[in-house]
Figure 1 (cartoon, rainbow, N blue to C red):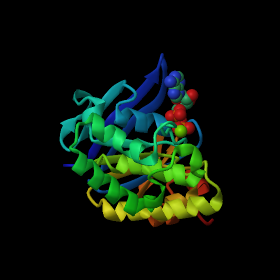
Figure 2: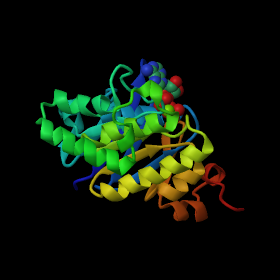
Figure 3: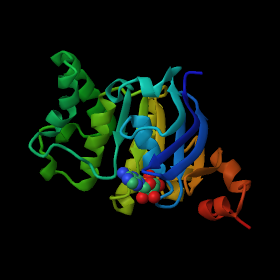
Length: 239
Ligand code: ADP
Ligand code: MG
C-alpha cells in the first residue's frame, strides 16, 4: 500500500506514555482530520510523522518505506502550524523561495512553483511585501504557500486556523479545500478542534482521547454511529 501506515505506534516522554498503540492506514491522497481534547496527543502524532519527534514503539511506513529510516528532510513532508513562523526580514517571495534555494532548484523552476502556489492561494499581489505588512490570514496563506511549493507528498496541518477570526477561518478553509482538489495525490492530515471543520473537510475523521484512537470513519458514519458517548459528544451527534 502506498499510503501512510501506523502500526502499534506509541510515544513516551521520559517514562510517561502519551500515545498508546496507534494503528491507522491512510490512503494516498486521503484527507484525514484528527480531533480530540487538548493534550490527547494530536500534535505529538503529527510531529512523529514529520520526524520532529522520535517514535518510542511501533512502526510507521509511507509509500512502502519505513519512516524511521528516512531522514525528516527526505520524507516529502510539509507541516503548517498554528503560528505562522515566517522569516520577518524576507519578502513573501523570499519566504516561499527559501527552502527551494536550499534544495538548489534552478531559478526558473523556483519562479514557476512560486507563481503556481501564489495563484492557488491568491497571494500574488503580496509577493513583494514583508510579513509585518500582512494580516494574520495573509500570513497563514503564505505559510501554507511555503509548504505547497515543496510539493509535499504528505501535508500536515496542526490547527492552522485557530489563530484566525471566524470569517477568515471560513475563507482559509475554502483555500485548503481548493488545495485538496489541486493536490489530489498528496495525503493530508489535519488537526483541529473545530467540529465544523472536521465534518466539512474530512474524507475521514479520527477521534482521539487520552493518547488513543476512539474511532475513525467517514464524517457522517461517525456522526450517525458514534462508537461511544465520548465520540457522540465530540461530534455533537443527536441523541
Ligand atoms: P494535543 O496536540 O492533542 O493538544 P500534544 O501532542 O501537544 O496534545 O500533547 C500530548 C501529551 O504529551 C500532553 O500530555 C503533553 O503535555 C505531552 N507532551 C507533549 N510534548 C512533550 C514534551 N516535549 N515533553 C514532555 N511531554 C510532552
Ligand atoms: Mg496540539
